[in-house]
Amino acid sequence: MSEALPGGRRIAVLGGGAWGTALAQAMLRAGHSVTLWARDAEMADAIRKRANPRYLPGIVLDAGIEATSSLAEALKGADCVLAVTPAQSLRQVLNEAKPYLAPAIPVVLCAKGIERNSGALLSTIAGEILPGTPIAALSGPSFATDVAKGLPTAVVVAAREESLAAELAALFSARNLRCYSSDDLVGVEIGGALKNVFALAAGAVAGAGLGASAQAAMVTRGFVELRRIGAAFGAKPETLMGLSGLGDLMLTCSSAQSRNFAYGLALGRGEALAGRPLAEGVPTAAIAARLAAEQGIDAPIISAVAAILEGAITIGEAVSMLMTRPLKTEND
Image (cartoon, rainbow, N blue to C red; front, top):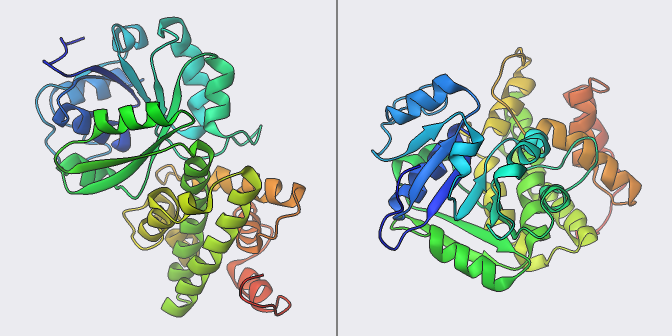
């Protein structure tokens, strides 16, 4: 691992996908030494050569990012760890990383989702595997390509300890990456996880040609469901109105740069879905629908998305179901 720069820290980034590579680039620009771990040795080699053609085609990475396929090498001497592996593989990666992690080193969760089998938030998984380790989460409206290119982006870093969140936000902030801090870890995680489900729905509406009015209605009512579920988990309303909630929802529900929106778009058009890039909203939809049902939370859009993905109903049937629900006041 390279020596830390004067005044900088040693940052380990776990995950060689688009977001992991973009965050490695951002941490380098913030003045830190960075080592990125990719399970694929060929990808690690490409990143060392300043490219990630599989996930960030056409972008030349800044010189200085170290990359390795060895967890031990990536984590050696790290002052902070960014866990950027997909939500459904986080448990496995943290178990593999555990022998190389000192308990006092913060682990920042940068994926967005809910574990499919357990229904656990990612901070819960990290807490189980790494007891005593400071846990935080980074979320907000941010496309990997924008961050990798150094375009202006604002995100939020959350931890249960406000002082830790503030310290990490200062550590990660750079010229074109503004990091806010929050002590609402659960709220930030819920917003980041559920917006992917609504991005699938927004894409499906667009792909099916249902019109901009339908898309706007879906996103707005989806935000109502996000707030209901967030409240059940103890999230603060103002968190869900912020970057990790409403902000991320607006971004991912409006652009095919979002993997989830693009997946929904293909779904709505009736295109083949096999082999498409990972869309975290797919596994999250099923568990979110189950959690909502178990807690008696009215979440018809989430339930419809889950049913569509399972093949239980068509998009047309889902629209009919949603449009013929009993009338109510808007605030119900």
